[in-house]
Image (tube, rainbow, N blue to C red; front, side):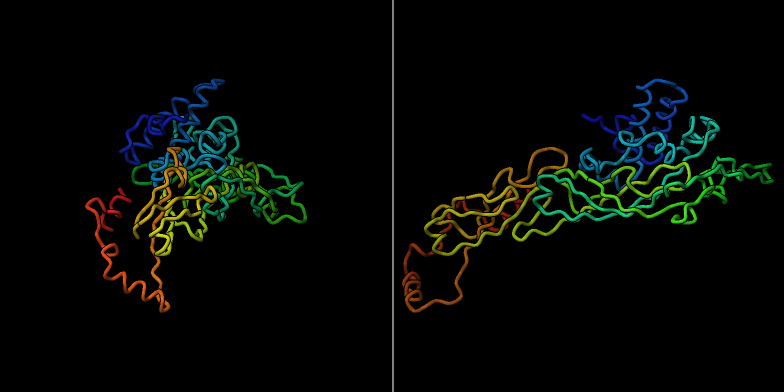
Length: 374
């Protein structure tokens, strides 16, 4: 079971952005590979801290995590944090947080650039929408989608940028009233990659890239909601030179069901029955996300009655069981009657058995609505 992100960083759930950043920097420096060479446990803790920071430092991701927990991002549609990112990803996204603790760049070896190695850039992300039926959402599904992504052309080669010497940044020294100030900016020649095009195949663009189609498999967990974003790590665009691919962002779009209406983890179904069925009682087959379900309506059932079928709703994204299916019984009143039917109901007007006589235990419409949302 995954450890809580707030516990990993050692902060409270009310921590603000500054506290989150400070806590992550402390953990990252403590478990930094430069400080713990060859220590696999330290490397794992370093990744976990990056994973926690990636989610908690983003207000939208943090809100989803607070509501749904780890499962809001799990599976191939994960956040791609410490458990999925490699060291390149971490230093590419968060290297500046380390400040001057490790040579100014936060990196080590060939990752961050602080140790004199070559800087690695990250390609841009791709975004797609995936439409899911209610049944697919209820059970979870694996979808195969075709994406058009940028990739380095076969045979392309790059060489170290002479402007920045492979660092991806150029240093500038300016004289101010406070003295000489040094600042770093992205290299204008290589765009921060540290490399420039050396050999370009005929089919490649000016950066040595081509467009290619790739089929990507996406594991979507049960219980996702409309608008939720999942991430498939390293399935976005490549970048020129010594780089790592971006990510594929998958936006969930829920297809409206013909008869079932979703409300969080609960489902609602309007069931219409005839007056005769209400009087005599009947067995009915209804829709559920798990297939057809047969229910029994007792004699004399009243319009507005709500039948709750436990566990027949949508699974919790947090793994806390299933919601319920709420069946709303509606007695259908015919708009026209033939002569014989009309005579029957005219006689019923004076029949005491047809005079409304609600029992004390019968709840009003508003009480039923209140119970439904409590």
